[in-house]
Image 1 (cartoon, helix red, strand yellow):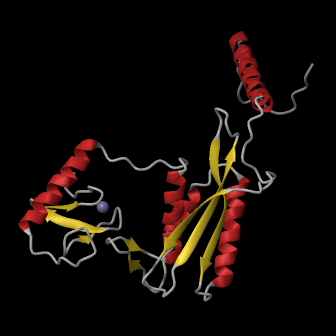
Image 2 (tube, protein in one colour):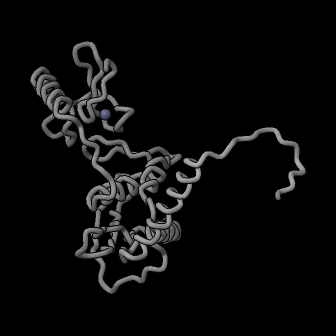
Image 3 (tube, helix red, strand yellow):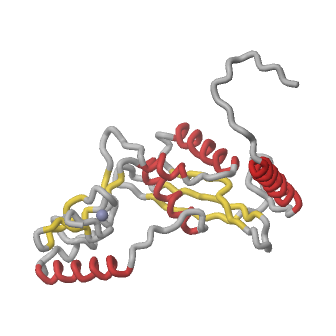
Length: 237
Ligand SMILES: [Zn+2]
C-alpha cells in the first residue's frame, strides 16, 4: 500500500501498452550502450593518448595588418583506422609567427582550442565563435575581396576549411541553377564593363559592394537588383 499525503490534483490510469512502450525504450537504451561497448569503436575523449605520429596540415595566413605571416598547423588523429567507423578528427593546433607581439595570447588560444579538440564531441562550434570576433581597430581586406573582421576570425576560417577538408563540416553546396546564374551574370557584367583594371587582384568587378552574407566585395547592380557574384545572394530573391 502507498500512503498519499499530498492532495491529488491529477490522475491517469496506466494502460498495459504504456508499460510495454516504457520497457521497450529502456531495452533500446541498454542495447545501444551494450553495442557501443562491444563494437570496440573508439570515440574521441580526453584520455586518448597522443600517438607518436599525427597527420598535419599547415595553413599560411598573410594579413595586411602584420609584416610577418602566421603559420597555422592542425594535426589530426585517425580513430578506428581501417574499420567502417574510421574517423579523422583534429587533435591539436599550433601557430607559428616571427611576430612575437601577441605571443602569450596565441599560446593560450592554441592550448584552449587543442583542449576542445581533444574533449571530443562536436567541435565545429569553434568556427562560428572565432569567425564572430571583431578587431576594434577594424578588420582588413584579404586579396580576392573578402573582408576579415580580425586575425582571430581568419583563424576561424582556416579551421573551417580544415574541418571541411577532413569531412567534419560540409561545404556549403550551391545548387547548379544558382551557380549557372552567377556565372552568366558575371560574364554579362564583365562584358558590359570591359575596361576594368588589369592589375586588380580581386576577381570581382571594380566598384562591387560588400555582401553582408558572405563578406565579399562582389555585390553589383544587375537588372535593377543588387546581386552578389560570390554567393548568389540577391535582394530580389
Ligand atoms: Zn555574397
